Length: 456
Image (cartoon, rainbow, N blue to C red; front, top):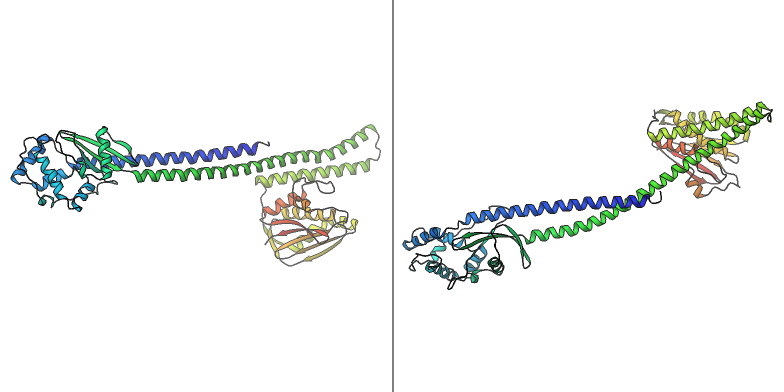
């Protein structure tokens, strides 16, 4: 039983951590899958929209430039081989002459475009119709044209940004026929290319920011999972400790119940054996003793059953308006004989007013409190009531050692008091009072003990 709280702590902590880590795994899978899907869509769209032509188609178009027909369309098609960043650098720096040189070199390069005459020239007016469009998907892919190394071939690297040079160099050393996620230096890209007659068109999407965000979310979530797991373990430990305490209380309850029932049974058995053997001849006195022991057992059993009904919700509360003054008088009436025999002075200060309560159940609870006050009173009892509370006070004998620790356990079942007596009367009273939605407490007041029932 002592290991229960440890087992529950480990179990709860492990379950909480597992659930959170499973959620984190699902989050990573969904996010990475979404990024890959969107990147793939953007790359496919870019490769399709770029409209890269076959060698024969490109040759035909370039040949048409000699006559000056559709030059704007041809320029647009060729410049899509360069990324928008590269094109911006060329145009913003006023280096369109370099780009023109590139295009003119392409026209005159018979290795790449055979059959195109060197007389084909492109001018600044060729750039007037350049337009871009990036409203295609969540991402906008960028493109590069990777040309094979040939003697005297054109060097495109001087038109590339630093980032594009890194991708360009990587693509020249790797195949990109299928979609790949690659880390090039400190950047993460989705890359895919398509083979052309004169080179490879590569489209790529920079997803470094997205993966950095996922990494940070993972770190934060892992820290949160550890903290929540520890808190869950602590909650499990406290729950386990509470369970152990409950088990201990139940164990003590059954032990005390057995002891309390065994005491009158032992007395009854002793008297019965005395009568059987002829040792006892005063049958009238013996009958009274046996009857008292049976009544004690009956009271205890009824109390146990009442508590069990309350805890199981099988004890209904039927409330009605009850006059507090009349109710207290009715509760005291059966106890008048005991009060007279002990010579106790009872002082009543009962205010006018009513409360909504179940009279039968409340009588059971108040009678238990009154019985306790009469039993342990040195000579005086005072009962006061108001619109807020009912107080039952009794003075205590000077040799009665009631401590604050005893006060804290007065309403515990079968709690053994300072005089060695045990019982469930006060525990049952508390259960009934709380079932009404009220509160009951015990406190040392003056030279005595006071029970307070607060109903407002």
